[in-house]
Image (cartoon, rainbow over all chains, first blue to last red; front, side, top):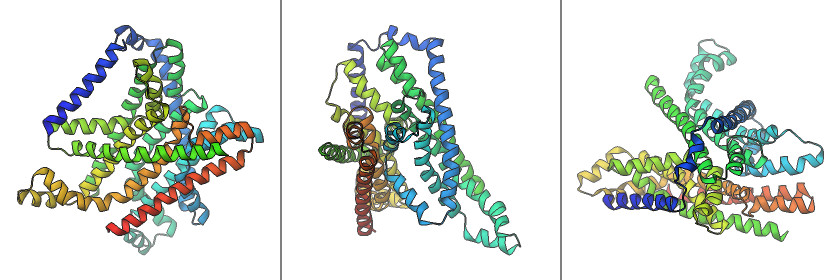
Length: 240
Length: 204
């Protein structure tokens, strides 16, 4: 059974490579541009814009998410539930095509960041809630019985432990954030994917360009994911 | 109005089709991932990491615009369905894997001690116990997948989100149309949530 699957996978890979080769996609000439600096400089400006958008989204979404997590009203709960089920793209379309006719026409950067932040705030709220819930209630009681104020208990006892428990999911959340900025493609904000589109229109190396773009995402996010796993493992060790 | 209904039907078809095939493919991937043969395990891990760490939109763009370049062209809907299935299969595989991991180690060892083969111990011992733990995560993936089908709209499939936008451009009743589309997604997610709730109670 295992031998069969290895053979099947190998055959699939060979078939795909053959298909690529037959249509001339493997020719060195088609890949050489990606060994030159100007192409990479262009792609790196896109990558930088991706980082900027992800950073801005992350900051806004974290602050908003924190507010959602600490508020006890039903509005916050409804917001989280609704955002979990409405596609970001729908909100982006509203930003792009609806709000301008009501006089709200933001710069491209914000047309991407605001919808992303609105939707990721709900995810952040979930992480914060779970983080605080993960701290044993006995910890808070112990803090209070030592004479710390409610605030002091939160600040010195509960939050440090909660933050430590949340770190791995916060890092993997960052991967999700970076991935979602690819929606800049729809907004025509020149992040990594849209930069790839511009490049592919110019050099007509569609497959090669998008494969390289995919590789950049893969490398960056793999690094983040393995960092998150490393964090999780080392936190699990020190907690004991 | 009929365009919105058509879009909703396309979203439903894309969601249903992708979820079923993502589950089937996810089972194959998770069997590779927990296999005792290092090469197979490597293939399974590589699959999951590759699809989870690159945005779905990049895969959609690559397949929709790239495949015709090497002489392969499917109808747009099918290309989108295939890509979404491939992508979500990685998430299904991870959900299944944590379900399997949640089954105590001793269970697998006991099965082996009784002389069951790897396949037998999976089928009779591990899977029935893991099934209970994966209902909720799979439901969450189903909901996420429903939302992810909107990205097919970004590469040209006229599903719910793109249909809403088209109607808006033609008729300019934005608030009504976008709220309607949003409500459709909400109802879909609520429906999935209700099914998950029932299944969970039956398995537990």
